[in-house]
Image 1 (cartoon, rainbow, N blue to C red):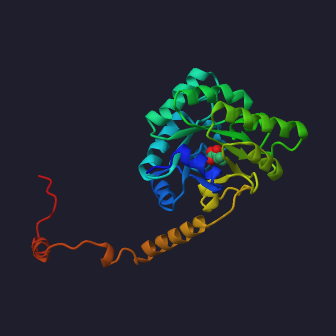
Image 2: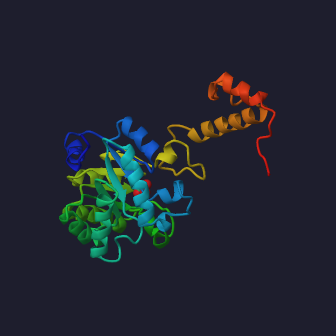
Length: 285
Ligand code: KIV
């Protein structure tokens, strides 16, 4: 049975911490799903860690749908959440509903995530009314990086902290089934988590959230341009990858690969006939 938004809400009620991770393709979705992750986010972080863009702003609906379909083929149990890319929901509610619908109808996702607090609450409400589960995302919202002036911790002043609390409450009232808190001081995340009925999922938001999300390529050491402060390296797959590749290159150069084990045989009689035939293989007239 696939994890539902009710299962996720129940986890908060039961005091069970929720692990969420990003995935962008079939093999990694299959691996994280088989490891038992309850929620997979096909994040627009895709833009940076897979497509090599400087920010998430360049990611399109078509990019997202392409990767969501691959993740859905790999993940059999987790709730898969589709990130709504920049400008797929901001311009007007009708466009937001249409694009959110595409994530479920064409992509096969079970929910969508979008960035923004109070000002997006009406959009969230209308999408939810259409039967599409929504995860909110407040604090550092990377799609607004140019407006925010960089990837900075949010909610440090009284005014900014009060605004984040209002944002979280507005999203819950609008029907969001959970809310991502990104780059928010830990004590503020605790306050927000205590005040909400729906689970908070933190990234750079301290240990008091109901759950945590990590970008797969950061935690596995597959994205090496930089390591965000909120990321913990659980493996260094990039190093393992490069060492394996260096060995492959060397073995090809040395003639050590392939061996008989990786090669195919053929009938000796056919081979004998071929090698005893003196005729040239190609004739020109
Ligand atoms: O796109 C993403 O990976 C995200 C997470 C950082 C929450 O939005």
